[in-house]
Image (tube, rainbow, N blue to C red; front, side, top):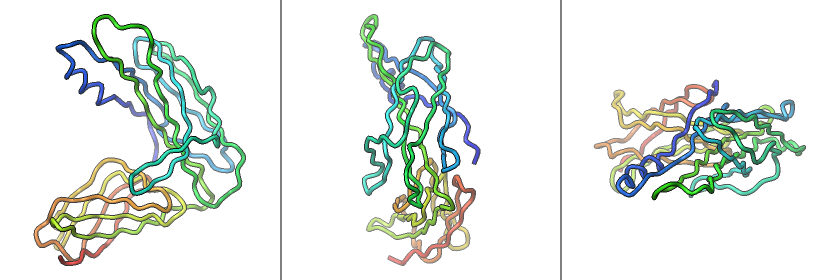
Length: 243
């Protein structure tokens, strides 16, 4: 899948701006990054990112490098020195750009993909604002994958019904590489639509994730899951036991 630049806006900033309208204002930085993720292998040991400052004022950015794992409580991060990021702190002029280079340190080939994230954190300007207001710093995470030769995801899907009749869809990745799931729909007997999921979610190697669909009357038997991810379209047939 070709990765293109996208722009993140702080929804929190917008919500707080409206909430504080009577008392003052809320200010947040704005920047964009391209590409939106990096993949490196034994042959490609470096990557390049471009940060563009969309604001009318300079912005100071600090980059934190973390190892990325997943558990029952979601994404987990721990500080890591496996990647070298240059520069780690920089100032981008208004409407300007900054090139960031990422290199991986020499590590043994463990035969499985190694996931990391780079968090681009805006350092708030210490200059006092006029009047009352709130400054909000933008923080954006970019996935970085050290790809293992021949590693692919191996996802198994399952379905169950909870006490309230809602359908829980589960996906377990037993492979050696991630799968980014963009969306999928679930249909039942005769192609009846039972629900759909949208919004990107990563499934790292050795992890399981869940989605809950609304209750479906008398839903049971064979279900079909069809969706899209960074490895293209996927389909799976699962059995939903009767309640």
